[in-house]
Image (cartoon, rainbow, N blue to C red):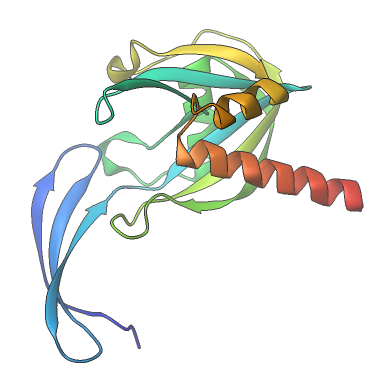
Length: 183
């Protein structure tokens, strides 16, 4: 039995990328409450790795009012449900122009489990071929650059990279690399 029971739900807002709903709930003690939920489709985050280099994208993040470096990531438009590996390959090509000869699933991340239903898969992209990017209109200010792993880690320490999904994805990469070394 779920500790919180949904007793009602109403959609408050919708666009091509997300919906916001307000649910009436009943807690285990019987008391009533409300829960605001942001529903977004699954996303894919891709770590492009070429030897010791990682490719990041930088773009303006409107809610923060800042440009931020992060790994390529995204969802399908129109709230579409796309296979995670297909979404990863598409996002990588779209944002960076890179095509991966190999995509390895590193794991699952939840964006903000206290307010969003969105979950995402992290992929390691290797055997990379460069080509032209195919960015969406909203990504017109995006740029890409290669960074060594040491530079990436320094950028995290200095607060230049603050995207929680990118930092968590890097942790999955480190765990995967550590696991391979112990086998």
